[in-house]
Length: 182
Image (cartoon, rainbow, N blue to C red; front, side, top):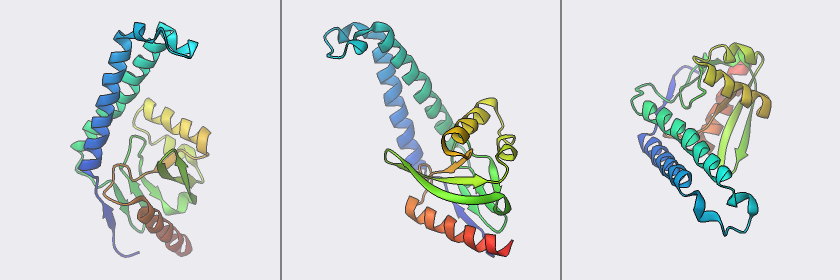
């Protein structure tokens, strides 16, 4: 590959994620202060005020974190993804670690959870990339990915100005091309 392919972040998609996060935070706050509304709920578990408050708190914490991370991403001027002869430089999500070198990649597979598709980037030395994490939370998220999927690295098009199927084709083509070179 001679040229560098840069895929920008999609501000529209980021704003949509922020809006969704705010709605879930609002729902969490509502659950937190309206636990008595579920006394007639058919499932006994969901009549328990502690369960309802717990769900509200988890919603606030989880979606609040996602919202904050996306707000930070709005001011990010770097491209979401760069694909060149060195590898894939990922700046698309919370667990992005920068450059993933072609020589380190052993496999690329697609996984779908619910309606979200993502590429799993399997590397020969996962610890090398987990150590690149800039925070303990990021490293913990990457270790969770490692336990669930066998690799700490994943790429989605959720925040990119690019269709997932096209992204998948592009990355797989460049992986094959650059694996044959090295």
